[in-house]
Image (cartoon, rainbow, N blue to C red; front, side):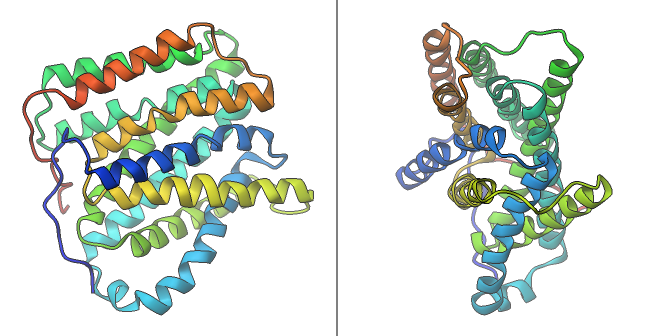
Length: 309
């Protein structure tokens, strides 16, 4: 059976202490994603496929053994939202992983983590009220991310193409977060992530086959990096964020993910020699200030559910 339904978390409520701890681990884990992907000698879409394929291979037997009754009891709406989340996650991975090959890790990460704005727009569209102060705070936080990383302002077609793909990836990630938040009010983390990751893996596999990207023949180091991506960014990152969506709103979770940027930038500087701008410190101050403004904004309202149809 599906787990008991919960009341939708308020859009801007400060998360429970447990969720804060879990999100901290998640941020540290996803911070490894950009640098690892950039350093992995495999086709971009293949990287995205394998991290989801490995995760599905781990989760599927667990779901079949321990959550079979829950899977059987999922409603059509829950199936639909979980599959839509998987489709959006596939789009997020496909666009963002490719963007990392066209622009810098810092710029790609900064642009893709503009997703709090997208999440807030989706919440507003479905009826949630978000105070003007919160919008201002999100704008400050996103500007802080740009300042922190020194977003690539190059006008080369290659860099601009990477930036556009990263923005699309951020929008897709926002939709994935909102759909996941709706599913998680009724469905366990394990069942939801299994359905979502399996959908993502199948779609990315089809993309790899269509693009004739090599799915094997890699070096041992490449396979180790793919496993590291699965354990870190996938399980300790995405899966933990999926866990807290039951009690923390997608808007707040997306704000927390902004802190992936300084982590990814530091790792890229240490291992890939991609140095962040000298404006990193004031950028981090802006990021912290913006998030602080958002979570202290007056007026709490319930995060609106996605419509059934």
